Image (cartoon, rainbow, N blue to C red):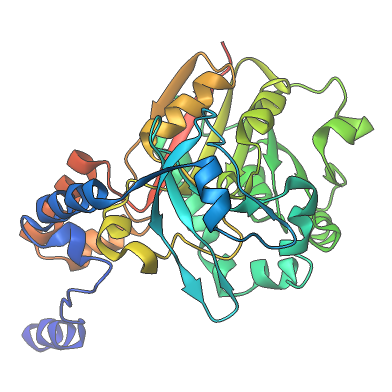
Length: 337
């Protein structure tokens, strides 16, 4: 027995402090990051939309816009994330603190961001390999609001190739889906074995007219919306009274964002806006939702993380996420009252 225990200890991977973990797990690091963040914000000049238009050229599918949440025309330039084949500017509204891409993409040209990307292949790659674990984790966190077992009528907005629809089916939910990718819709139908999945805008799909849902989900979709208030208001019209809109998206209050800034992994090629818990609450309210619930999000692999972290490190990590609302992702629900 002693030899077996020794073998297990020898095989276990030693704890390594990674760059992604450091903002949460090093004692007092979260506080230091917050202090540096406030100093950084204090140095950023405020510009108006008109001033910005004079100094910032725009691309063929871009436009300079006021805040997409509150309409304010003044903002601070914060970041210029850049990769091999894309780059853009990120600003913060001086009125409501929303972070958004500016210049932004003209909504009518949004499809051009995706034309050269095989969306279905992307979802089937390593990106999609751990998605279902995340879905289960988020559903579990809202188990007091969303019944863990059916019957529940659910619409997944931006359903991709049906990964969440499969999870919904396992919970006994009646799963429906919409997406803008024809290839993904066909893959989702094949995965689920039914045809309650369509390509297009819900308002244009005749089979959805008059349908009302208990739950609508947006998994990593919010950051891609050019008109989030309009979209949320439209989705609310498909909810039953008391129905819920569940959203999972990157967190603009993330300690990783504040620590890594331009290099934050939430800045990706096709993201347009970045919501914090505070700005998300405003979005739900402006879209007509009567109640808003937010659950600070640990890494979806929190149980595995807890198992391998020293107890003091885990406690520091957990405290940092809670006290700073600084997890890298948001999980939240609005209720149609």
